[in-house]
Image (cartoon, rainbow, N blue to C red):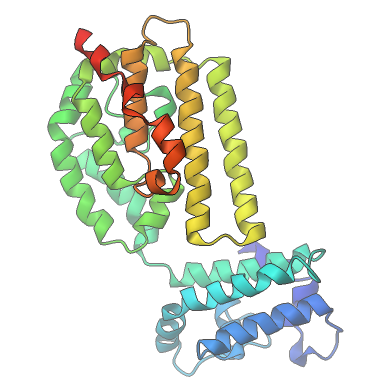
Amino acid sequence: MAAIYILAGAMTVLLMTPNYVTSQPDQCTLAAQNVMKTCSEGASISMGNFLWFVTNGTSTNGVAPSDPATFKDQICAVEPQVTGCIFNQLGQLFKTMCSGSPQTLAAVQNFLFTYDNKCAHPCRATLIDSLRQCYVSSGLSADLFLSNRTAGHVIGSTESEVTTFCNKRATLLGCMKPIHDNCPEALQILSAADFHLPSYEKGVTILCNHPLVYLKGLECFDEPTPQVEACVQKSQQAFLQTQIDAQAKHFTQEQYVTATCKVTIYQADCDLKAWLKKNHEACNKAVVGLRREMECSLLPPNCPILQKPLFDTACHEDTFHKGDRDNF
């Protein structure tokens, strides 16, 4: 919430000054005000009520609704419409007259953050912990949930742990699925953690079908090489640039997913090629091929469609080297 108090700049004039009389708002501030007014009123929410809600009642221009509980239901029901409208209209605004007004942009973003937070489904705060608890209730280590895939520890670190996981994965998934399905925000929450439950189910099934190859792979993936670390660093930079581009260019959901899929596939391909070049007897085609098959299965289901040429190359059946697994 700290950003809400950054309003010493342009948005202070816009939202905190009674009747907009004692200060002279600049063009950017007035334009941003007009965008929020147009978008909120377009959803039958008055500007006064909107400001009251997104500033937690601190704006002197906010007007408290007669029934706050009913109003919350009303304003939250139109959140996608209002925020989508604001983002779309601000796109051009911040390319022109507001290009040099970062405080105004920060303030608007903060209001939308507050809006989103107050309308969040309760599961947003509990989903990750609830899914992690499924591991515990299934007799598995909670550390395996959202574990470090770079090191390869997805279904366990020893033969005993792998056997236990594979025997109990149906129980685990049976616990996770209803929790996941009953949370309307599950897709967005877990996407931020690079986790997609149906893809995860496919991935662990692949590993459980080849436990000895998986265990051999832990020897390979235990120590990253400089080439592997370079792939990770390049990927992190690419993801950061995607976030910047998405914000600056106001990506649609499909544009954002397309961009992140591209980065994810490139990362997996770069990473696995680097592992295959590692000077270690465990880093063989069978091991790295299994890892590639798993990584490809963990991609969100729309990635193979949105990035078909790239996916078809990086995740071609031949790159999995399934025939080499017969030696284990």
